[in-house]
Image 1 (cartoon, helix red, strand yellow):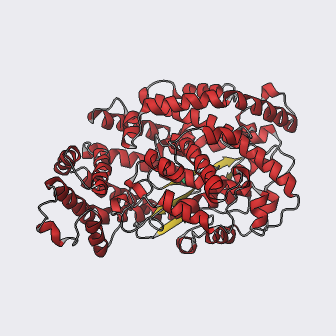
Image 2 (cartoon, helix red, strand yellow):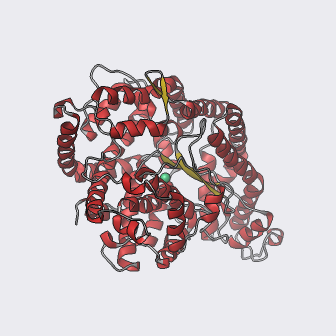
Image 3 (cartoon, protein in one colour):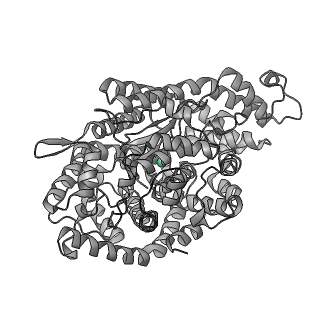
Length: 579
Ligand SMILES: [Zn+2]
């Protein structure tokens, strides 16, 4: 579950003129735009005004959003300064439109009025939150975008440098995974963290600006506001994470003890001398490969792109057109990460990736293409464009993670026609990795959630110390001796997708819950045996029960619609408990 992955932010709208008529029909105007003027007398006044607002938003704001999405894509593909400049300008124009005070006042009044059409009422709710976020001083907004862009660009061009030699992100990961030399590991790990010092000042400035913006809107701090804008309450999320902490603490400690023993042996050090660079991932957010079987070997001759194409076509969710529009291989200047974006909500969906033939990128491509299925490509056009997107970031992350896990299953690989020399060993290793992965990832998410909560709660505290205090408490990883550096700053998500990370964990709960539902209702088999290959009923289920409602349902209503229950940790606990 490599987490250098993000779905695009929530501003990706798009609709043609004919689409607008579909919208008007969908929100309760039988003859499209014409009836806006001659509104039926049974049509409530609130419904009419809401319909007009949504239509106007479509005409005026949609083109700005499409432009912003495109500029965002271009900047990440090229890494060029001028493209980042264009991206920033596009973002500013969009922010300006959403900052309109009169429109926000109108939205607020509409939100409090009685709208009888449920889809329309939901569209107003969603728009209200979207505009609310931008109700800050335009000068402040501009500064935030500028600082945040500076950080993002620094990340895109930063390369770790060891002994005068530059390393790509993939090369860093390779050394951390393969070297057994503690000195070399330490040097590469420290070099990869160097980006933290490069962005520290800008990142801190972004945090202060975000807090200032949140306080002006009446929120305690930015973290509280960001959760509210995502239809979550800070105390509810913390409560869920406290429960997860309880649930995972002892199983994690046991798994970690086993991992440490093996790592200490491999590196020829004492368990007490293990440090962050010994965990094979820059943040210990992934399970270290300490197993007898190396999963990567299987992928050396695999065409990852083709395998994804075949798999998604087989379950009735083809993604050929997405691949055709995508940018999938490494290039200097290009963003080293991976993401999926719906440019216009008219099926122009693209993936940026940096494919290398290994298990990590197999999982990453399954992940990003999972996102791509959950877009305007499978959300009906009958929904107004405001709602023609995923229910919530946690539901799209959940879908992506649900598909991602198959890169660790020999059963899945073999059924896809990939030769696996020792399937039993591959499966045992894969299952153990997956279990460790869930535990390790859940502890890592604890660090991210609690760090961000504290970061915005008190940005002036010793953040270097806070970071390592949390890492030691939740991940049980010993801090580097005598080092005080802004290592938290090397996690790009803290700048570019703030107060977002907990959604990966909630997404994991969603993924497990949906998978268990598919196993039970669609494939009628044990969750450990449900591998979807060639089963078009899986695609039907996803389209009808998960993708179809788009944003017309909130994340918790969608979870109920898709699985029959509210979001809970039962399926997750069953998966890592080995039950
Ligand atoms: Zn993702």
